[in-house]
Image (cartoon, rainbow, N blue to C red; front, side, top):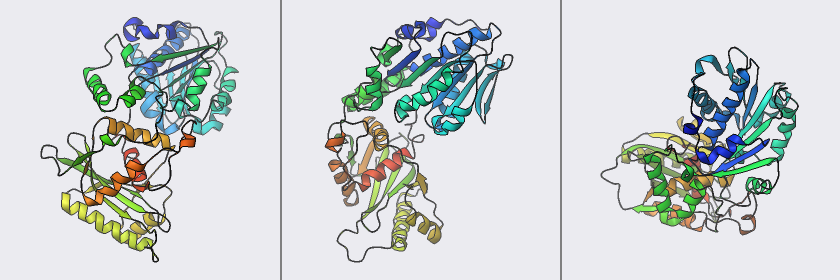
Length: 434
């Protein structure tokens, strides 16, 4: 085993986490606090202590959704094993996701809570720890309770207890279930509730580039900085967006060329509006709303059929391509919409990508990050005025703000939905997937 100095890999702020013998450990905090890295190193260390004795020891790592495993916890555990210089002593598989010690069979098992039956029925045995990463994604604490008992029964005989870890960035809403749950556990003797932020980094893990991004968000939207990087549940306010972060342009900047264009669609047909937005991504990684199409059937005796909306979209799209001399990259639409999507494919062979929608508050959160980074602009044209007007009026429902599932007022919000679809369907491209 490679000798590593843990004190050079784990900030002093996390000493309490490393030393505690409590069975339940909740690590919450802002982005770039390195809480997940600390847990990964600790889990590997715990397993290695038993491997050293020739024992087989297993660890279970859980995300809410299975398809997020590969790019998050799976790579994080590999990173931690590499820190100990032992990656060559493990084998890694992706179907299923497992990292196994060759000699003892000690294994990191990775599961999505969305495949609960498989998770519940697997008799792993010799379990020493369970880690719920991005715990705020789970629906409620009951989802933990459903699996915890299963794992406790499979405890390794040489350990006193199965240790449980939760890590998450606190949601902005203080009334979110996980914020209230972790607060309620602070006085429980078997629980360690630990808070961290990038400000607790004494070892220089936060790079200068990270600090510049943090400072930019701090200057643009201080409340959002407190939420995102300090991990403070700052509340929702009434208006969903800070309109000062929507920057108008009279023309495209000469020093920031367009790399590609994406479009996004929210449809309404008979009862509500259909809207499309064309968004440019530039060399400086800025986003510019180029144009908005908006059709409302309200108060119209004869409403447009899907075939007419299909033709409108095709002509609008064609104009965008011809004007900006760029092909369209990704074309996004509400996953619940079938009529226009099918009609466009029938008429023109155009495939729109249906987005998998999440909770409204989570979809809005990604838009907040883009805005807080000061990277969103719009051409100040007549077509784009409806986009700005709807975002100005976009508000949380007052009666839901102090609940764990806040809702927006569903009136004149079609461009708001369309913008959320665009951002959430292009997270990696926009540098918003962490």
